[in-house]
Image (cartoon, rainbow, N blue to C red):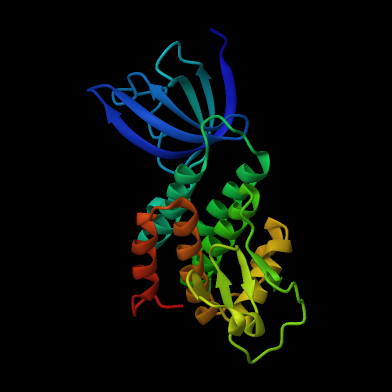
Length: 269
């Protein structure tokens, strides 16, 4: 069969038998795929130190005949993102990114914008710690902005600039706002008071909503300019947790680990 090529990030790796590895990757030209790397556990040349979690590779592969797994023939290491695997907080953040992609993405549905977003968040998480004045806060912002933009690309963009019910854009400060999980948008105080039921409503401050709305409009490379204060960061993570769970009808388990680390007194932003 014809050998094909794609730039890809490794999302998951597990052993298969005594010699092989099963690899889940997100490729620019392929989307999410599962493949088998024959002999990878014993390889001293083709795959040594390459099929590592979150590494960016140039993969050569062939389509499988019957199993649905592509056959990974070769891998060229482009960027190992070694800093992620050397720091527990960074690893937890990247694990959340990987689990979100595995939960949301359909098989073989490529999206170049999504792949660019993935590279941006890994580069941001892996950032040079010697230049990072507040790495935990920056990591929190990176995963929040990543998930927010991921939802947008998937067609579940949260409506944060106007009330979902009355469509009013004049949102006065000092009021209590809520986000409708079912409606996918912000609910102003006036509309909230008129609702018969507050089921599936999540409190969301106007300050946090405005930051997230701004992030939705910015290009990936400009997101680092947007400051996410610790209080808004924690509120945003809680908001995305509930909204994602509502949409997926399941929990993302690595989220809890990251939130616990960020809330640790020694690493609190």
